[in-house]
Amino acid sequence: GITMYAAPKIYQDIVVPSPTINMYSMRPIHDDVTGIITSSSTGDFTDLERRQDKCLAEMEQLQARLNKIEVDCAPASTTGPGKVDIVIGCGVGSPAVFLGAILARKSNTLIKVFSHSSNTASVDSGITNKLLKVNRHESEVTGVNIIYKDTSAAYFVDKPGRQVPVFGLSNILRYIARSQGYTALYNESNLNTAAAIDGMLAMVDSLEMKSTAQLLNEFVKIISSSSSAYLCGDNLSIADIALCCCLTASVVSGGQIPRVLREYLDTVARGEYEMRVLKAFINGN
Image (cartoon, rainbow, N blue to C red; front, side, top):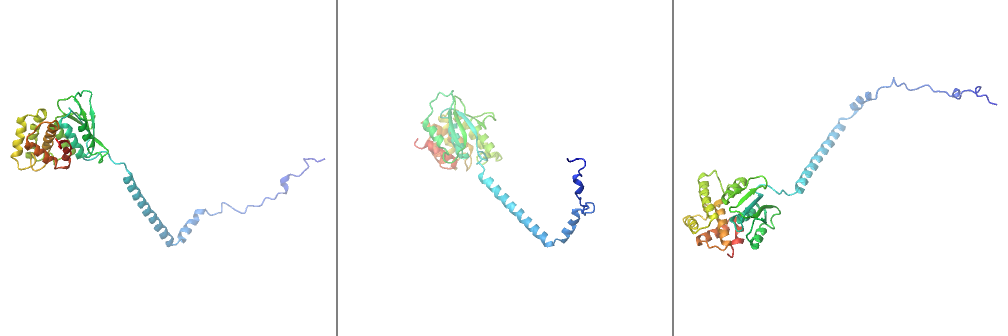
């Protein structure tokens, strides 16, 4: 038998080699770095810097292209200088209806027309269709909302929900001119012209409430005695816009206006771009 205790241990015949590496006598690896850097040629660093500069320049070009793509692909702004966002409440056939058309044309926005439950007057579909055609192929943004209501005076709200309603055609025009910066139409810094415009607007306010032969004749005298095609000076003003809206409302409703005023209306409607929108309503009447 085998006596396990008499057998030699298995590791007695294994020779363990003596270590040939002394880790404590080895030089740290970073000791060679100085030698590497010192031995590198200056040309190697110059080439590296050149490549780095080239990469940075290419990154700047890519960033510039990216910025251009972001601008080109950005969605068109729906608001901006000259854009309006208003609600006009008025009766059917009110001069404010035609003011809405002028404002939409000037700001290049669309019109929407609504009839409030308080409105009992018949809505002329022909007028509505002409309003809806304003800037139809020029814009996709609605800026003027006309609501037919049972109200004695026209009113409007600028940026719905944020402003107190402003009543009266002249006040609406003053507000719009100030908020939109239409100084060519109403420049308050020119005191004499602004005072003349305010005087005309006071007369238009009376005409808006009730058109009478006496008031119409007053305007006939003013226009006949002037060498200008406009009420206040040589340029279109908010006074002309207000009067033309009242005259257009009279023409559309079948009313008779003096020949001088009809010629004045036709002349102004052939003038500035925004005023030409009235031709669709007065032609054939």
